Length: 254
Image 1 (cartoon, rainbow, N blue to C red):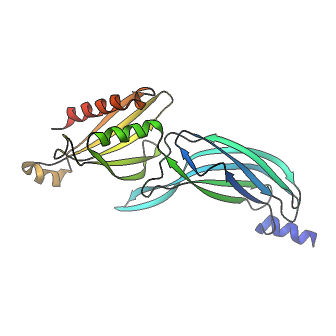
Image 2 (cartoon, helix red, strand yellow):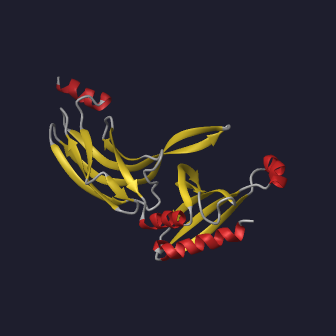
């Protein structure tokens, strides 16, 4: 019977070790430290544990053959070393923490974030767990959104895409009021945080004049890409951000 139990746990994972990830809370700000505990419960037999991998996951869109495909992607990956034997029915609690990237997509529209836990078990079936989290904007991103809103823009939509070698969130703003109403169709904003700076990449989609509408249909819409770099201090200064974005748009809008 002992050999049979060992075989079930090793080959099928039946009666084997289980893992449950418990986070300190369910809502985090992008850039905030995440704390939690790994609850590992031994199964019917003794097993050797290797490592636990924590993956920060999201869903993003890619275009293939004129079709939009949704894929799951890893934003960040962390390793928690376990490297121990767990006896039958033994319970082990392992604390962990990591810092959520400031570039983590926020929980907005169709954007979902979850933590996938992967427990490696020596010579046996690995175990998994998944826990959803709500992510709110970092201070810098919140400042950018507020600055655009005060300039008459409305946040209309957002999508997670694979751009610039990483998965990022693209925000779509519509000029409901203000001086850019009637001049812009929309502004797409990408927020890229680095160690000491933050880059805003704006794609300006301008309204077409009747004389150029035929050419636009043939050659695409009138778009400009603008990149603005901020220090970590300036990106949280709403007046500075608003003035910088407005001046950049004015230089490119006809």
